[in-house]
Each structure stands twice: as structure tokens, then as C-alpha cells.
Amino acid sequence: MKNLGRLLLAFLVPLAVAGLVFLGPAATRKAPAPARSGALPTRPVTDPSGRTAAENRTVAAALDAWARGNEGPALRAAEDDDAAPSAERDDLADLYATYHPFFVRGDLNGDGLIDFAQAFVEKGAGGWFHVAVFLGKPDGGFEAPIWVERAVSLAAGDLSMERTLLIVVPDLGLDEARRWRWDGIEQRFLDADADAVPRYDAEDATPDDKPHART
Image: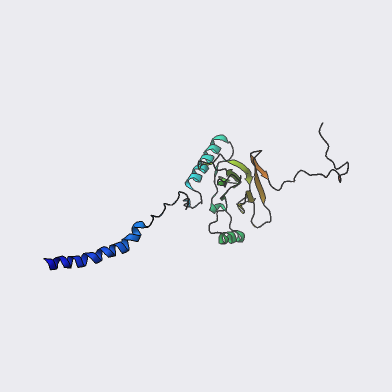
């Protein structure tokens, strides 16, 4: 019996010491802090058009409102296949990981929320395009469409954004673009390249150059 007790003691003591060595630091180690919500945002799921489910619902609602409120031609969302092939378009497709000629998203009114622009094309003959912007809302949805361009030729061109400017290029092979900026006061998009109101220096301007005050 005594030998058995000694044998057990001989095995149990080293096991206890080993447990303190290996388990002790683990017991005092702090558990990792849970990740903060939003620390690693997930990329929204999109379909082949590049649009998310929320964007698709917004586009569908805009088309429904157009059909009910306009007597003009029926519209549908312009897709990648509506773009005429060209060397310039191939270069853009090679440059960007994903390239959708008639759909682009970004923050166009500077409120920190994602907006998107979508081109629509007339059904049937003609093929005229209409361009609308959908401003983002805090709840993740989008406002009703703001129509920026109507009945334009866009099959050879595309839409893009440069910071807070929406750029409409009618033909990628030509050096021509129309740039639109959001005006928070007028609540609409204005031509960013329109001629500005001339400013005059009171000392240098001639009497004919000075603006006439309205009385």
C-alpha cells in the first residue's frame, strides 16, 4: 500500500506542477476584445449590373413612377450590353476591375452617404438615354430620381464620377464631357462648366464694364 501511494504521489506531483506552468498563464491571459461593429465592413452584394438589392429596388420604383407619370417612351435600365464596342471602352475595361458604363456610385452631394447615377434607355427604336441621380438616405435607402439629362446619345459613351462631379461622356472617342455638380441651395444639378457671373474690380473697370445696379 505504501509503495502504491508513493507511486501515485510520484505521478500526481509532476502533473500538478505541469498544469500550473502551462495553464497558469492561460488563466491570467485576457480574453480578446470583441470586434467593434462596423470595424470591418462587408462589401455589399451586387448582381451582374453592379447594383445592390437596394439599388435595384430603387431603379424599379423609378421605372414604375416613370411609367405612371409620363406619356413619353417607356424606359428600362441601361445595362452593359447597351454600350457600343470601341477601343476606348476596352481600355477602360482593362483599367478597372469592374466597369459598368451606365452605372456609377459615389458621394455626389458631400453628405457622407453613397449616391448612385443610372442611365436609362428608351425601349424600341431611337435608343435615347436618360440619366438620373439617386441621393442616399441615412436609413440606407435612396431619394426619388433627380433627372440630370434627358434624351441624349450615350451608347458610345459612359458615366463616371470625379469627387462630387457627375461626368457624362456622350462619346468616348471624342474629347467632350458634360460635368454636373450638386447645388444644395437650388437642390438640383448644375452645369459645372457653365460661364460664371463676371466679377469686376471697382478701381479697374470702366463705366461701360461696371454692372448696372437694379433700382
